[in-house]
Amino acid sequence: MSTQRVFVARLAGCAVFDPAGDRLGKVRDVVVIYRKDDPPRVIGLVVEIPGRRHVFLSIGRVTSIATGQVITTGLINVRRFDQRGGEVRVMTELVGRKVYFRDNSGHAVIEDVAIERNRLGEWDIGQLFLRKPKTSASPFAKGPTTFANWDEVREQQTPGESQSAEQLVASYSELKPADLANTLLDLPDERLLEVAEELPDDRLADALEEMPEDEQVHILEQLGEERAADILDAMEPDDAADLLGQLSEASREQLLELMEPEEADDVRALLQYGPDTAGGLMTPEPIVLSADATVAEALALIRRHELHPALAAAVFVTLPPYEAPTGRLLGTVHFQRMLRYPPQERLGAIIDDTLEPVPATASAAEVARLLASYNLVSLPVVDQAHRLVGAVSVDDVLDYLLPEDWRSHDGDDPLVAQTSVPTTTASIPRRR
Image 1 (cartoon, rainbow, N blue to C red):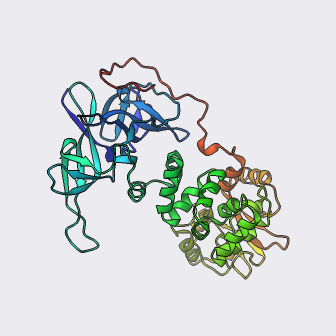
Image 2 (cartoon, rainbow, N blue to C red):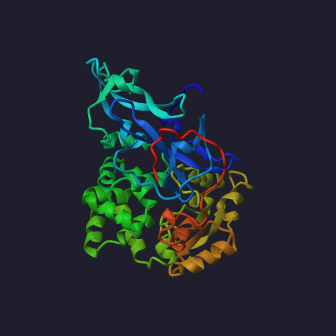
Image 3 (cartoon, helix red, strand yellow):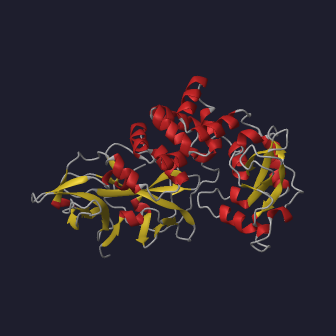
């Protein structure tokens, strides 16, 4: 077998398949151990399987690594990955680390790491892709890049020491909010808080919205009041209200005072309702237009990229004022209905007035029943005066109805497939 080389940054996110072609999960990281006189040895992969659980896949179970995919023998231990002493994760701990050239020609930062499979079927760290310090004073300039073998550099940090939080944040920049939340929760507590400090407000807000409430509270309490208020400003009002509802009354009021007035007003309005009611689940920022507005105007509003897909499914027509709590609700115009009419058509002429709104005091179970009965993704929520106060969407209801630990639920079906594909396992450290 000839030597095979794969760069870890390209490997991360690749699908993992069994020999039958069934997808088992996706690669999240590569685990190595340091050796005294040789490059670090690859002992396995961190693989994310359904349920967002990270498990360890021994490199001895990997039969091939090709472009965009990893093939295994089909045997996966589904116990959650727990990093052990002496083990180092390449993406989490090596990428972004500063190293010095042994010929005293300066230093560089590791931007990627190549792992190589030798003729014995073992995987080691091979070349490093490095970026040297920039030579131009321009803020947009980047330093030159180069390749180096592991034995041509030495580390500034001790083996196993983590990369800077700034570099780690950069490596997470492409993760979706749910994946970012899951990745953060896999970090040791001290490391998690370091990264949280470096994340932009909107990214941390998105990640917090995907975490269990106790984890949200834990992180928020470590940030300091001003930063915590900024994060709450960046969260969806209903998520911010849910989070604040877990705090003491004194802490809640202090943070509300530090928030932007408009954002705080929305959250205060939601806190008036019970968490298991339509008012407690809704967002107070639906799309509201007048009956004289046109289809073209409505379509322009729902095209906004920051708008949640469930809220973009319909616009609500009311009497003035047009910000919640609005004037009396006249009806709903669904996105699909708008597509059947010319751009200049008035919304008042195509209102669906058969869809009954739900009172803010309606139970979550009643809202779920209505959404399911009429195949809807959102419902208008009104007060006693029939004024629109918000809209509750199907994702809000699911968040409430699903068990508290659904984000980390591992499922009941074990992800284990048995095959007899032979692999070379000689000299590979055993991890049980």
